[in-house]
Length: 199
Image (cartoon, rainbow, N blue to C red; front, top):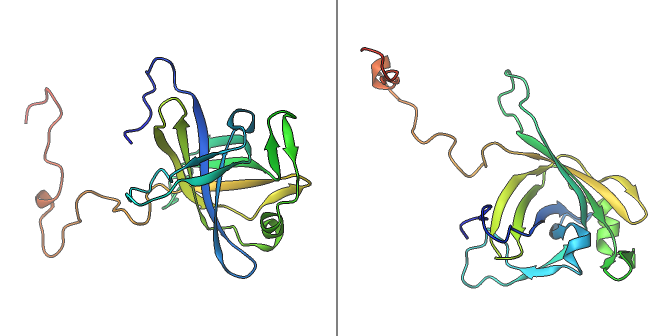
């Protein structure tokens, strides 16, 4: 998909998708797929993972669990070698969203309820996409790792925080390699001039 056309008419009907991983108390890697906001997602949806390009991929269930997703852009200090460009905070609800009641029901979610306290979430991967429900187009907005294990755990919900990576680990940071061997500065320094300035 080419991404969301923000100038389309009608305007995009945007919701969000969050896919994350954690390790259960038994050490098994599990994947969650959540969508929101709850008030607009009904009972959830079936959709292929936005980054899955396999022709044999199957639609997966995205559970309606999210509200209060917020992003916090930060620059950090200049002496930090790897700096998150933003944090993502979200509230995750337990149970099933009931559109008629406008609330979550059946708050016991078995494995998820248990893994909130006994699983290991910190440093596991998490991604967020925006989805235009009018066209089905998606656009990745966040890619990073859970910053910590679930917090603010209470009956029916818990909170999660993630930090974004500037450069995904499987992609090169630079388009060109640094020079190697014996080279002179002119071999790799920028030789361009400012427009209008005589050389």
